[in-house]
Length: 263
Image (cartoon, rainbow, N blue to C red; front, side, top):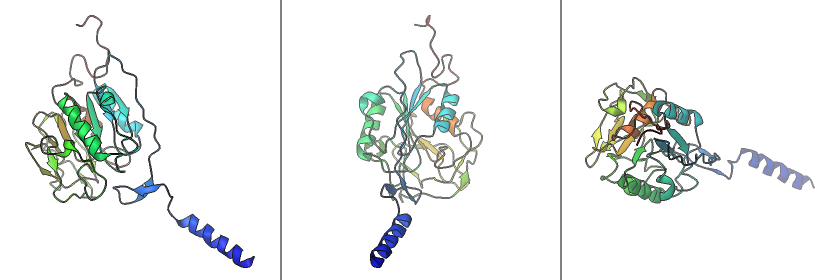
């Protein structure tokens, strides 16, 4: 009995110190439980103009979504891309899709292919932190090829080091933006016809875009999980609207009900 009691104590001590069976690798360098946030998808409203789907492989951040919605005037829904992959029918409900990686995507190739199809159909895509991070969890498929993504990562790695925006952005992506920073920033180089808009103080690319602005790479994040500060909500709003779509400056801005007298 004494040996059995000792064995039980040892097993209990091991269980207390062992990582959870549900803990998996993240790009932040620590294992963590899989996200448990439920998808938050609003009903389709034909009157609404400017719908953004926030679809990271990470848990929801309602505060971040609210900041994007406030900057854009639009609807910003959440989809957990670590649990499943949005299909073409769901994506078609939106004007813009914004994704970044922390946990593994449910299917990184399929999601990348569907995002490319979404762009081909007229949608806009924002690729965020870790999408090029081939050292860990990353996005793949056609959206990451030179015909779509304006950048790639020669090393497939990330800085994991703080830097702030250098203030040198010149396109609509930086309209009204004065400050932002991030620790989690991919090492990037342009590809295809990609163009750079803005750098960090350490000279890393901050934002880049396909010439038609239909795909923007936003190298960092204001999501709580990555801890960036500054005008991230406005950056996302601007990137979604830079292709000539609805923006807060339009007479009929994102998300606001169109006049019944308007044709």
